[in-house]
Structure formats: C-alpha cells, structure tokens
Amino acid sequence: MKFKHTFNVFIDNFSVTFKQLLYRLVIIVIAAVFMSLVITPYKNALTGSEDYTNLVNGVKSFLSNLVQGRPTDLGQSTEQVKTAFDNLLVLVSDNRANIAWGVVGIVAIYFVEKFFMGLGNYAAAAVVNDKMALRANSSFFLTLIRNLKEASLYNLMYIPLSMIYDAAILFGIYFLVFKGLFFLIVPLQLCLFVTLTLFAISVKMMFTTDWLPALIRGKKQQGAAFVYTFNRRRKNSLNVLANFFVLTTIIFLLNVAGATFSFGAALLISVPSSYVILLCFEFVNYYDREELKYFIDKNTIIKPDKERPLTREEFFRGE
Image (cartoon, rainbow, N blue to C red; front, side, top):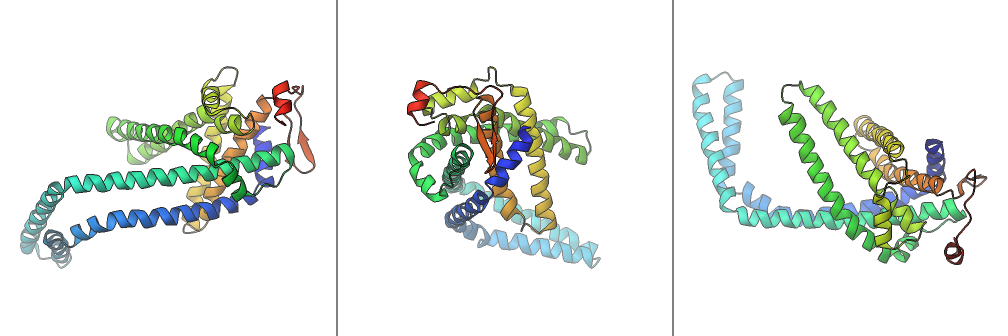
C-alpha cells in the first residue's frame, strides 16, 4: 500500500515538480557560470601551450598516416605524440599547486550548489507535508524563505555526510568491481557496478528517511531529528530498504530511458520528479509508522487502524 499511497501523493503534488525544475535550473546555470570562471584559465593555459599543439598535431599526423597506409611515417608520428605527451605531463606537474587550488574551487562550488539544491528539497518536502496534513496549497518560494534557517542547518549537516558517503562508496564499489573482479566480462561488471551503487544509495536513504519528516512533521530540533533518523529500532528497516531499492531502480531506468530516447529532453521532468516522489515516500512511510492520518487527494484520507491521540505538546503546537 505504501507504493500506491506514494504514487497518489506524488500525483496530488505534481505541481511541485515544475517549481523544483525552475529552481534547480537557476541553481545549475549559476553554478555552471562560476565553474566556467574557475576552469577557463587552466583550460586556456593548457590548450594554448606549444606542447598541447604538438600533441594534437602529432595525433592528427598519426591518424592520417594510418588511414592513408603509410607505415614508414607512423614511427615518426608516434615519437612526436610521445614527446609532446611527456612534455605536457611535465607542464601539468609544474603547475600542480595551481591545479590543486582549481580543484578546491570546483569542489567548493559543487558543495554550494548541493547546499542550495538541498534548500529546494527541504521546501518541496514542506509543501508536500502541508498538502498531506492540511490540504494546504503552500507556495514553494514562500515556504523556501520561511524555512530558510531550518533548511540551512539541515543541509549543513546532511550534505557533508552525504558527499563523504557517496565518494567512499563509489570508490569502494569501483575498485571492488573493476579491479577486484577484473576477470568478469565488461557487461557483467557494469551490471554489478550499477546494482551495488543503487543498493548503496538505498542504504543511505533508509538511514536518512525519517530526517526531513521528523523536522517538518514531527517538529523536532535538528539534533533530535538526527538521532531519531539513525535509530532504526521498530522501524522495519529491511522493508524500507527494499522499497527504496525498488524505487531507486525504477527511477534510474526511467531517467536512463528518458535520456536515451528523448536526447535528454525528458530529464527536465524526470529528474525533479525523482526527488519529489522520493520525498513523498519518506512522508508516507513516516505518517504510516507514526499512525497519523493524511490526505492522498482531496477526497481521500488515509487513517491508521488505531489512530494515535495527540500528546499535550503536539496539541499546543497545532499538530
């Protein structure tokens, strides 16, 4: 039933997808401009060097001799490519300090981009919760501004943990599959890599699934919500993990199909929709477990078998 209710809540909040799309496009464009400003000087310094020009000319000469069947000239072209490539490596090595600062700049911009994306996810989650709890059509951008402090604190905690986890998992899975299991054929390696990556993402989402609902619906403080989401007692974690794995697999397939068959155009809808439907599942899972009633559309209220009475604190908080 969670899947059915999640889909219904997603349809009921589908307009959030377009607001997410607009917000994310603005953030992506701004981040791309700043990344371009960081990368361009290094790119120009590299492509404007004599060694780079020699390397390009050497590769063109090698391919030309190969296509035209002049084996006697291939040796000279190969030597030119090797010499130019070695000189280019020396150039990069001599400028490694500047390159390191460029990498730091790109990582910093990426972190800021993720931070602002996270603010948008928090606002979308709050809008979904308002619709589920009160049938309120909250403004996405007003909700973003109203929850700016709480969303900022949440993202300052969540994003570093998520980035560290993602980097460690991706490197670990890469070396396991492509280095440790090098004897497997490439299609099987790719299949295993994707499967393990989706599973790792599902594990992360299982542990963090209650974080936003606890903050927004449960009105917990940041520290209490953090402890609550990682405490998996009586939360049926295996069922949640299985649901997330199915959801992330479906989302992955839809995004890949959209990118392939529409030349990327479908991603404009499928990517923001992916975030919204995952948020819907988090809140459906939270409401069901906490035995709270909620709307899945304007005519349907989902009530638990035994509705939990509000505590005194929850009553005075207006829950």
